[in-house]
Image 1 (cartoon, one colour):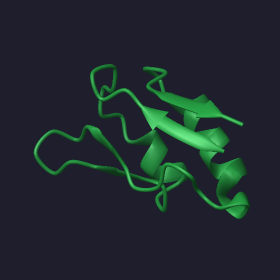
Image 2 (cartoon, rainbow, N blue to C red; image 1 turned 90 degrees about the horizontal axis):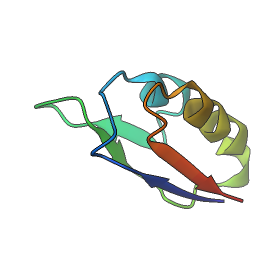
Image 3 (cartoon, rainbow, N blue to C red; image 1 turned 45 degrees about the vertical axis):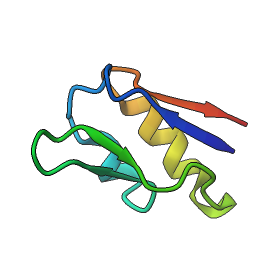
Image 4 (cartoon, rainbow, N blue to C red; image 1 turned 180 degrees about the vertical axis):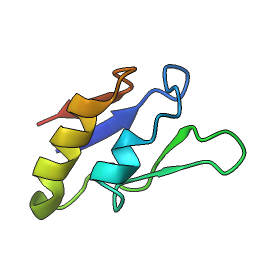
Length: 64
């Protein structure tokens, strides 16, 4: 799994951090997503998929 984020699309909703905090974080100054691990381990795959599905801006892309 490879994860990418589009910080321009991000609206700082924070759903990604709530669902996969080991993979995503938010910048302190504006809440925009920060990708912590572009190749998360298999045990986090479901959480990452859920985070991407819950993103209202569709700013998270996943390559399986």
